[in-house]
Length: 369
Ligand SMILES: NC(=O)c1ccc[n+]([C@@H]2O[C@H](COP(=O)([O-])OP(=O)(O)OC[C@H]3O[C@@H](n4cnc5c(N)ncnc54)[C@H](OP(=O)(O)O)[C@@H]3O)[C@@H](O)[C@H]2O)c1
Image (cartoon, rainbow, N blue to C red):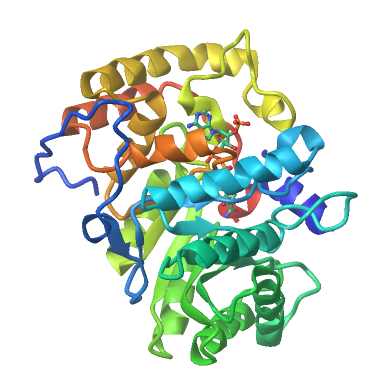
């Protein structure tokens, strides 16, 4: 069921104008290492500090949406290399979920289990390493009330091999209501099982309700994780981004490179395979080309790749932490180059304007509830 849900869930398948950014040109191969002080931000009103960009671990162990329905040792080594390369460059925030990866198919493994192993192996070499782990509770229809949150969290901790996680999020809103789940998040904080709590795919109203309910217990709602990229700007249109800014909740941007499509590596002649091919069709990719050409040209001015430009665009919206998914070391290394510089306000606006000419793909339906 978890496998199907993880597929079903994702198979859809104020800008600060007063600041003038003076972008620093870096050679594209000079991805650098983040200086932790400069590059860490507090998640909402919580005490948790994370890097300005995290790594998404949905594809790790997954054979239901990613990886051409396969998972093997080579992919596992590549995922571990992605984790290590990110950490080597100072990206120490990793997002997973109890429904990521696969638990049932032959040879499959859960993303939480893999992440737990990667952390343990890293700690053996580097005991001081400090990884901020975010995972998520699946609001399955048969899960009721606050106790279900604690019991799912304990199972996640066991797979991760950790005593607590840094961020625990409600993956999507519950169909029977969310009050019990929000109570469960509060209980998790009070029991010392998590440092901070957040939600995901929450509308403006749900966000306000969750924020208010936790506030009564003195617990800040740290984050709302939603689909947000240059070509999927629903959070700007449905009040979610503005509400995050108003209430001091960090917006964690998922699918920030549009599942690889904004990297420029896919084209009408070379569309993505698997479920992504149903979303990002040759027709869609044809319409995307003018935007991609402009992204490339802007990147050339800064010696940056399209991937780095589109991640930088998201960070430039302020109060946004993107969590691009990395399958291998090269991808994670490239993400690090999205940090430490800024596109100009004019480029920022120009990209939004060009992107608004492209009809967005359909998102995860629950975010529109
Ligand atoms: N809360 C939610 O409901 C929800 C939903 C979706 C995702 N998420 C979270 O957000 C994370 C990221 O979202 P996502 O995985 O959907 O999409 P994404 O980050 O926009 O795209 C990730 C994919 O892009 C490709 N890619 C990554 N880096 C690249 C690079 N440097 N150059 C070229 N291609 C590159 C890889 O696939 P290929 O190499 O195969 O092209 C990779 O799997 C997930 O891992 C998960 O943690 C949360």
